[in-house]
Image 1 (cartoon, rainbow, N blue to C red):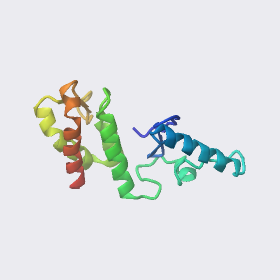
Image 2: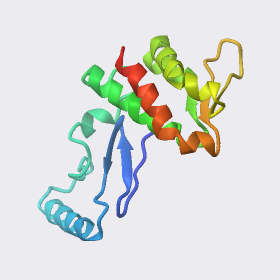
Image 3: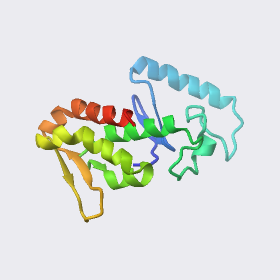
Image 4: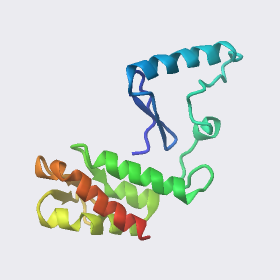
Length: 164
């Protein structure tokens, strides 16, 4: 969570400073998009500070974001980032690190996530592992039932997060 990465190519998704963006998924749209980017970049002044036009508008401020607050302090952006992280991490074998959620967003968000995942935990579609007594733990969906019902489980978590 909180990582930045660049992905290139058809349909790829990148993430910078808690903001994701993707390239077109259809081949014809992607070719058109690449052509536009070439045209734009040829008219830009090249310098060490040059930023591709497809980076987020706030890129210059995003490079140093490390705090719990988004660069604008916008709770909607933080909520969107948390929702995106929940959706992405629960669909991986590593799961969602609730200790990270606690550090970044507070105990109330962890509690909401656990309320949303309660049925999945009860039905053994998900597991919660804690390395230490005071560690919030890692929430993981189980293969294959948890992944089969991932949309339902994640939707339940979103409902609980939305109630905050």
